[in-house]
Amino acid sequence: MEYLKFLEEKLKGKKSFGGEMMRFLDLALGWLANMISILEEIVGLTVGDEEKFPLLSAWTQDFEDAPIIKGNWPH
Image (cartoon, rainbow, N blue to C red; front, side):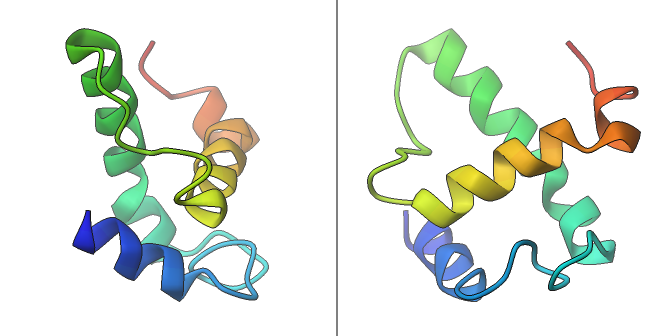
């Protein structure tokens, strides 16, 4: 949870970790968004709570919806 809080802080005032555009750090952390959603589904545990981490939740959704990611994202 501490790491998620850290990432939430880094997103303040930005759409992505790279600012307004997706950059290397967004791509490097993208696997985290995928793994969290898979673990939540398998275990039935909510890690990426929208109320606790609204910026991180929005970033995750934006990342998943990016055309380059959406076309190559594992389902």
